[in-house]
Length: 210
Image (tube, rainbow, N blue to C red; front, side, top):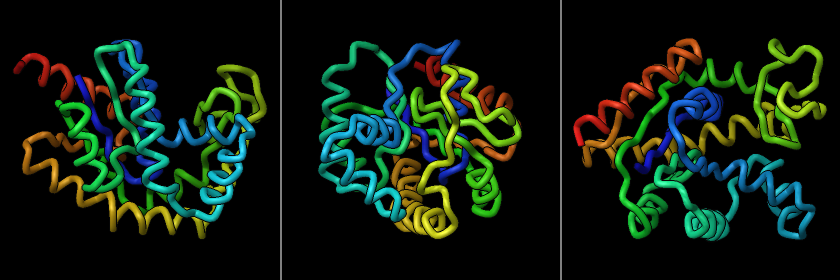
């Protein structure tokens, strides 16, 4: 089963994946995580990616495609969840050449609420865990014990640029996938466990209908 998660930055895509992972075995393919792994490797490419992201810009389309395709070739699990990919209709068409989608989950969250969430979040540079200042007051990752950090691109200018990119490039995907009857819309302003329950219900209903 192949699933795409769509939502404005801060809508909780990573949290949803974390909450449903105990019930649903899948390969989690996040472009953000793949890019951060490249940055953490210290490679020349990673340094270039870091500079682009810190300015609030998007990484070259072909680079993203190469990373995604490489991951899919090495995937051994039957189920895949895509987060941050495809980010536009062109990439959606590229993905269709490689695999068939079963479900698209749109996490609907207002821009104002997303902005507040992003400014309140912390990230673990070691294991990739994302949490909030409120939940991790010690500043230590509860998963691996590393020191939590605020992402360099979680500043107002960079956030606004990402929002603009989302609405101009990614948001049209919703209509694109609605025409294929793939979209389930979930209110992302609910509590994380409630959002995860709704996503799981959509997955289970799809499997039942098959």
